[in-house]
Length: 108
Image (cartoon, rainbow, N blue to C red; front, top):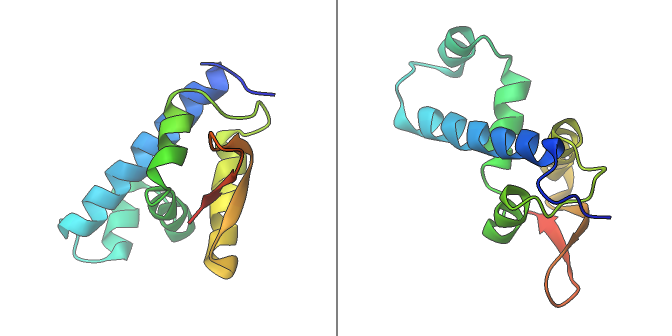
């Protein structure tokens, strides 16, 4: 079941926006180290790594999330957990998101 523009989709949009901010900051080299970045942002390395991975979602997944076309069950917390599985498997399905042709979207 999809949730058009629910409060969950707003949380997901914020999570995606935060992920892109983290990636931009990390790649800009504005911090001397990851440790300096974690200290400045008040986040641990695991959270920064999770957000960084989310910034590399396929464009069609990002678009679907920003448009609120995600399953009701897909919360920001669940999406962050799914991003951790990418580290070991290379891809993780995003349950309930479908491409127009019926193929399940995957987190790269």
